[in-house]
Image 1: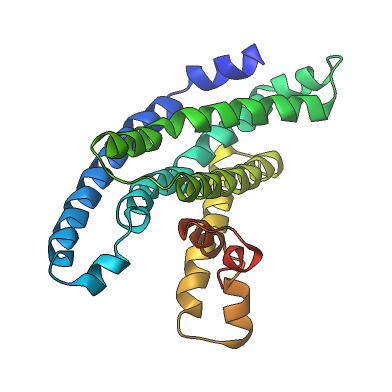
Image 2: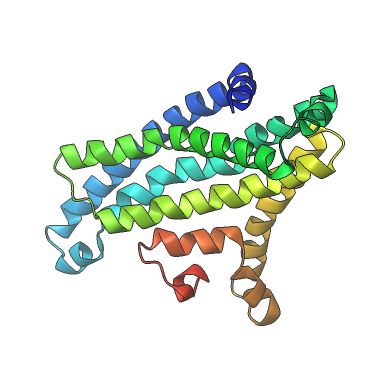
Length: 227
């Protein structure tokens, strides 16, 4: 476990991730609050607009959108580095010769990656706390569903990244394979827009569609399938 922490902290990727994510969350939060405030002014005169306003949709989902971008474009590189660097130096073979099973090694890497992700999620949680301290309403169950949705999305991306790193010869190839899988969800959603049949059915299982169910603040089998 200490070795995994040293390897991750020694790289520049995690610090770039935290720096960019903090800036993205800050920008997303300020813009979301500004737009939500403008919409609230209109709601004072239009009751039907007021009924459609929700801090979840207007503030929290856009703020956590920064975390979504980090999960898609930055976090996979941290996961890939945990295996790719050891493969290139040959230390992974030496590690597997120690009196510990492969499952133990993988579990240690996953635990450290989970801890890193929780640290990366702190700016988003800080934005939620800031909104609450400023007098805004926070639906704890809805925010919890949103948080869990992004956590599960990150877990799937990490799984894809680790598999790609284990199969690919280089970290660059693993990164391309991971991005192809995640961006493939975007392409599938775009291609299925306004379509029906098999393509529409397949789009219900894309990562973005599954995450969208959690962004609605309600977890159910139908919401998870984007229906």
